[in-house]
Length: 213
Image (tube, rainbow, N blue to C red):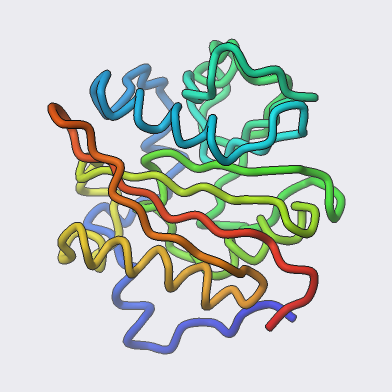
C-alpha cells in the first residue's frame, strides 16, 4: 500500500521558493558536481561499502556524474534525472530516463529490478518524498540497499522549505523519516561521513524489506 499523503501542514513544508515547474529549471545542462573532491571521495567510499558490485544499480536523480567506485563492475546502472544532455555525458550510466518525480513519482521499471540504489545531493528537491521512497522500494529486490547522500549545498530556490529551515542533524532525521514513512524499509542508518577538510557529507541508507510495515 502506498504511503499516506502529507496533511496540509506537511504540504507547506514541501513548498519551494521557485514554484515554476522543475523541468524549466533543468532544461539547460548544469555540469557541476555541487560538492568538492573530499566529499565526492566520501560518497564513493560509502557506495563501495554498501552497493553490491556485480548488481544492477539505480542512480536516482542522476546527472553527468554518479560518483560510483571507478573500479567497480555492475551489471548495469540506470539513471533517472531531469536533463538528457547531462546523463548522456555520464560515463557510468548504461541507460537513463528523464522523469520529474515531483510531477509523477513513478519509475518505469518492473518490481524487484535492481540490487541497489543511490541518490546523491538531490533529496532536498523532492516534494513527494514518501511516494518516491516507496517507488524506489518497489523496484528494488528484498534486502537491496538505498543510499541517500547529501551535503549543505543546494540550489536554494529549488530546495523544499523544510530542508532550508533545518540544520545538518535535522536533515539526517528528516531523510530517515522518509524511509520510515514509506513503510517498506528496515535497518536505517544515519551517517556523518564528512571529510576532515572540505564540504560536509551525510548519508542515510536502509534496506528494502520483504513486506511493508
